[in-house]
Image (cartoon, rainbow over all chains, first blue to last red):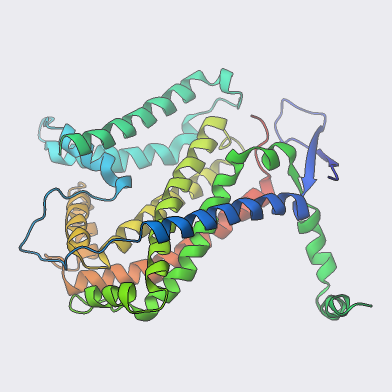
Length: 152
Length: 220
């Protein structure tokens, strides 16, 4: 494969001399890998679609509540947290907190990540706090997903 | 001169293709981004998006967004339309895979710290894309109008409705009344096939343009 070398000028202040980065040209090397991965994924999707077709239950009936009902898997954690949080805080109802925390506050925090984490290092060993917060958030989401299924 | 060279030359003479394409073709991708499979996740999400556009257009040709017709039209797609079952199932699987890929892509960016200066705004666009992708899933869930669709939407709009201050308006805009019915269907259909696709296309362009301008973060 034809390796090419380019000089990359880092914008960060800590590095003044250009850093040499080894790289492959976008075409054909990078694109080839993308195409191989895309073929694998597209093939798997077609396989899964043929083996496990999308379901269709009985027509919607507003007067017949089925049990159990679950939202989509990627909203289960919101649903789980809503069930988990049963405490009112002052005048704020538990239900409102149970929705606001995992949706509004969670997405608010996600949006703010680059502005909260001012640590310039991207070495994983030098950003223990950010990694710990990430792991806690991840475990929290997994726990509340689990909670929504088990304590339905 | 071979035929394909002639064709290329014809266009090159008129549109200066070489000038245009060379920087794209020769643009170097860092070695670690080519060899590390974690860097595929964003591309996988994009592939799923392309599959969703393709299969979605075909589904829209047969789907009828009214409470009376919706279920029957989906049943028709699944049983009578040639390849209909495969197309709808592919849409279903690509949708779920896309959401998973977007989430994993975000986790890679987070744990590698790739959102740091100068890429803060691309992270913000990325989180917006995650929001839009899940809204896509949520709005698409109602369309088959089966028991799961109806009751999951009931929970979902109920949850959105309990957000303080904004919740009641979000719920009213989504449901279009007090109960989930014909108004809700046409709204969800319009959101799913018009509003969200245009929004996501614009945001994806911004997302890719920013990656192109700023380069992939290289400091692991």
